[in-house]
Length: 133
Image (cartoon, rainbow, N blue to C red; front, top):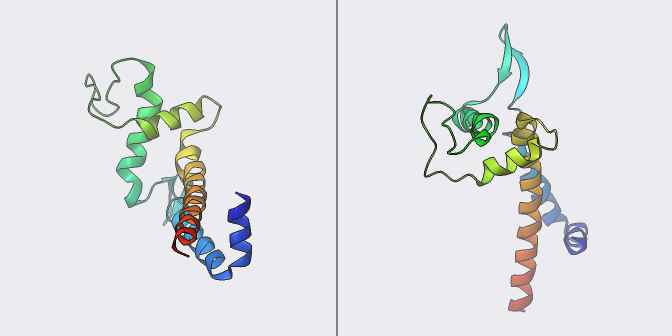
């Protein structure tokens, strides 16, 4: 991590790219999951890009992991099968620490993933540039 911070401090173009990527990547997600009022109607705002996924993942976390086989959160009596549970298991584990699913899905994970992406990208570029010189 120290190498990444040093690389960002010494290369201003890389710092600009990292900051720009971070704000662009989270600006589309962090505005979702808020209680807000638009054009006279108030309620929970979830943008069109996240409408299905947000409701699916949060419903699955709140209902499906309470029994096995996992009940389908949208269809009564149905079970969930053939599905990748990794993100949902992370959400479920973080809710056991007292975090709200909306906070984890729309605030915590996007920031963590953006920071990890920048970190891994810089490490990869540094590893490739050492081998080519």
